[in-house]
Each structure stands twice: as C-alpha cells, then as structure tokens.
Image (cartoon, rainbow, N blue to C red; front, side, top):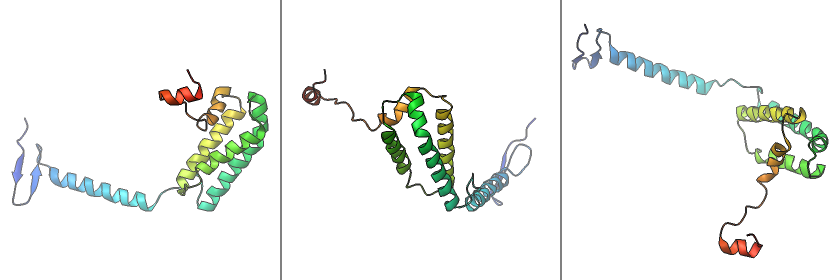
Length: 154
C-alpha cells in the first residue's frame, strides 16, 4: 500500500510515496551534477601530451614516420602515384588539421594517425583504401545537362 503524495506549500517541498523529500533529493542531485561539471571543466586529464609543445612533437614524429614509409607503401600497394605526389598528399592531410589547438584533440588525431600507419604498413588495408585519400581532391562530375554536354560525358 502506497501513501499518496502530499504537497506542503509552506515549506515548498514534495514528499513522495514513502515520505522522503523528493524535491530536496532532486535539487541536491542537480547541484551535485553542476559541481561535477565545474570540476571537470577545470581539470581535464590529458590523453598523451601534457602541454602543447609535447603534442606538437608527437604530431611531427607521426609526420616523419609517414614520410619515411611512403616509398614502401607506394611499392607494396602498387599505387599509380609517384612518391612525391604521395608526400604532397601527406602534407595536405596534416595541413588540413593545422588549426586544431586543443591538446586532447591533437592527441586523438595523432592516435588515429598511428593506427592508420600501422594498418597501412602491416598491409591490413587494400589498394582502394589507400586511393581513397585522393578521391576528395578530384573534381566532381557535372550534374546538369549543359555541363555534361560540354565535357562530353554521356
């Protein structure tokens, strides 16, 4: 048997079925949540790097590792690109994320880059996965009739 919920307007609280102060519990929970958010915003644990300089060194080391592996990747995957073209694409990929300033985001990008490098070097990828890096730099095909006609596309 449950007791009915009663409202005490004078003290501005609501008691639940068992007589506990439900409003006060919700208020305490909300305040504890706010305090936890404040603490989390103030103290963010680093993933790998402690400061920006260390994150920069990690990114540079990743770039150098990719740079050294490119001739072997071109040879192993039989990519129809020169080593210089692949290195310029590598530079383009790193410059694309140059604006990132958050250390945690930089660390996550470095971790992803290390995983990609390992998968590529261990030949866990296929040639199509490697060629996908050049897909975004190709010009899109025309969609309207006149553009197709001018380019000679059926």
